[in-house]
Length: 148
Image (tube, rainbow, N blue to C red):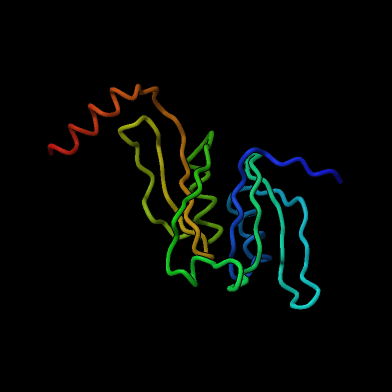
């Protein structure tokens, strides 16, 4: 197998990578490419999957090398999944065990969004464009919201 990587791909650490991969398959329709098992510990040292064609790399937490959101006490980045049917995607994620951070809402910037947290601490923004909005109009709407 010859690996061809995209210009940018996230690599995440979790406690329980095998369970996380199963969750991402159920919640987001992830397709696993492969996984490498650490022969000493049995942990997933590296695995790859795609969501809507976008590559994500994952491993079990190795505290000396990478830390999960659980160890860190939060996240510093979120993932955004562009959806054709955000309502169905949101329902699927919640049914798979994702916790709702922000419910589905049509936003001032022309997207219908929801944010969920997976059981491993990572946050995912599910988003569908519902209106074409220029940056100038986004700013005008944001300014109007701030004045309320």
